[in-house]
Length: 280
Image (cartoon, rainbow, N blue to C red; front, side, top):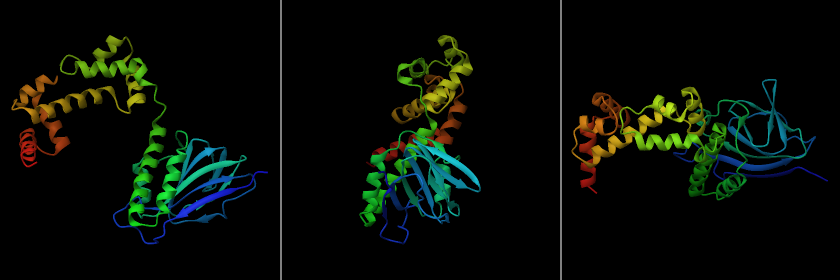
């Protein structure tokens, strides 16, 4: 006979750990059976993340019902009602709570902008490790728990960006390799690569974004910019020649990109790097 099983651990220190905006208040793992309820509907003051491992559950929020299936993530923000129940037997899920005042802003920054959030298979081991760290009851454990929560949120975000179309074994990976090889050529651009691969530019754009989370033109520009900054650090080559060597015809444009990334001019970037090297 199936029965509900609950495991939870709470931070010993009720005060917020200093300098930890991702302070973990508690964490747990629940396996709920039909007809059971975690608790009576209640408004809570912290953020909570639920990652479904197996089965289905239901959240009621502002009179809307949300079904959450395995490998999906749901979250509740401070001031929202926690009204949760299983709709399959059993429903297994793992959870963590964040009690910093900026937790809602942090979740938004991590990409938690829709509910439920598609994710990958629940990282059960990461949640179990989080429970161990919260249970330490030490400042060091609190800090480690914050790092673990950060990793869990990143894992959820990576799942929401999926599916990746196995780029290492596809023509998309060939495109990336071609950009790595041809970026010094100023005539090489995304349109030329699309012609070379015999695909429509829009098709290349969509496939590249799906595989790498950025457009092919952004990748090509970043590749050129990275190499330009390496040349500035390693040589006295004038900025105009550096631009030519990385496939950019406009040295002023390159200078603007470097200023945007580093906050300083190419000359100051080079001088600052060498000064730092001399001090090591």
